[in-house]
Length: 315
Image (cartoon, rainbow, N blue to C red; front, top):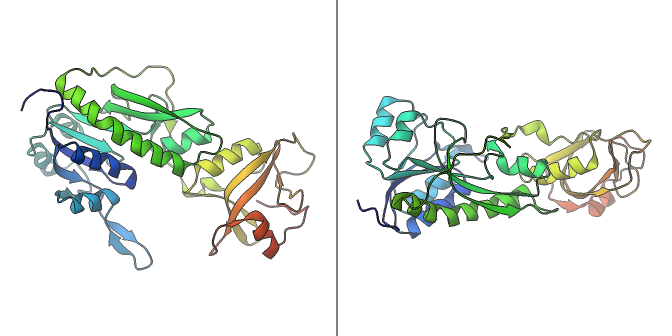
């Protein structure tokens, strides 16, 4: 194996969701030898609960690459099988399993992770959503060498992208997925050639992006409207933001803030015929909503078939 920049590397790829697929394709297109892909096992999905492979699994099979789906990498046999691949490096993108030290140590150049934040901010499971929810002005992608910690390894490359006032998690997911695919090839080339030195993460600015829970999307109108509007964008498409209106659960797909200060009305009070809702500070006006079992619709269309009188308490 030569050490020249741009050399063809023997790689394994460890990833599962569609976020990781562009990175896998970038490695293949760059001419690297992706000898094996590791993905989460197929899981039941759809009405028939038929087992469905992950997006990475399907993409790897379509490219003719061997796919392994172990439920753990702590098993000595699984670790021996990984070491036997005789890898230059492993690329990890949203894989979903902890990598024990024997896995991290097996490739010649180690394991390289594509992480969807500007580390050390938003280490952990849901960096895209937490960045929007917190009101960050920017986020990005960090390519790092993995160690035994939770997203604590030294950084090879970082690149920022802005978070606009209308950016949703779906928007940011696609942008950061593409950015990860853009950065991984030069990161590996620099690592292999010795021209790129990993830098330790700063000790300051560490935050953790905890895993999303299904019930986090319930809108608490006692909170400021600005926080709720960010939550709507952060939780698009999953777990989704919603409030209860009687026996109905109304999903809020987009909303805007009305800057009217602190109101005398109880939070959750509908203020007008446009479904403007009083919050702990200011008010939230849903722009696009969805009833259970129905398609998305603009709020004015929703109100023509589902009248909500001012003074109604929701949530």
